Length: 383
Image (cartoon, rainbow, N blue to C red):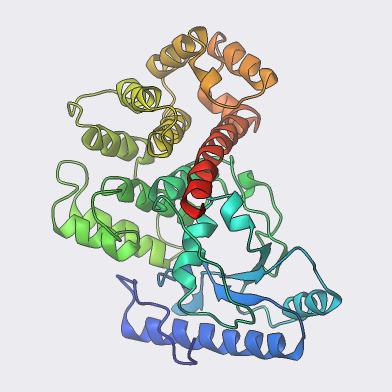
């Protein structure tokens, strides 16, 4: 990665002054990190991930002062499991850098990316590989069998409600090692969830479409006609790229947006209810329970269930429990029992979400089920 690398190559609403600011701030910090890396003798590769790695960083603007909103997510990839004293010294050096740029270092052996192929990190790393900050060993071939869109949508939608939070090995920013509900209602997270939802419509239909700029292109080309206007899409992107704490919060109805996207993608009548959209996603999964692609439909169905509670949808879940269809998910007997208990109670979906009990385990269990299927496909691919 060069010292003048453009980290805003997928940005939509940042002007040139903002792009110059972002690039200087990030490139200066990467130069410092690279110099610290060079001081220590351990075998590892260093890459930029997250929104910066995807070329879509964000800024914060308050009182006409611009700061970097995105944190600098980085992968420190090890060839094996050993964490040497030299590696630990490098990580300590990172925590002592100036705090004007938030840095997170994800330390992982390269084998993790084959064993957890449903994680967003696989897709981030694949995009980062051509632009290493430092490389000290030859990376093996990595393969992500599915684009990131469904996984990203699920994780953002669940994360918005406190059902998922990524742990960090070492980090200098405020969200390190905190439970998901701390950032559950963050405005930027909501905009990310909306963008992930909009991406779902062209998942698998446009090769290589993954980023914010692709959502803007889809809006111009009429992909969201009858769902959301191009101006509204650009507003979501602008709020994501240019965070203004003094700006009134968006009145976007994320659950309704998700319903409309699912209805269009599944070819349902526009008047289809949330419960009908849920059933359509569920039916696709039941038709091909061993398919990785169809398994993503189950995750999206669970996300819809989580986002848009209603009496009708709860009735659907009650019938699912009675038919033991959730047994297709690797859910423990304890959580199957809790799901059935909730479905037969007067509690709302929001109650189960706010308690932090039911939905995280249900979603994570479904993710685990899909990972096992993907692992089998990957083993066949490398055989």
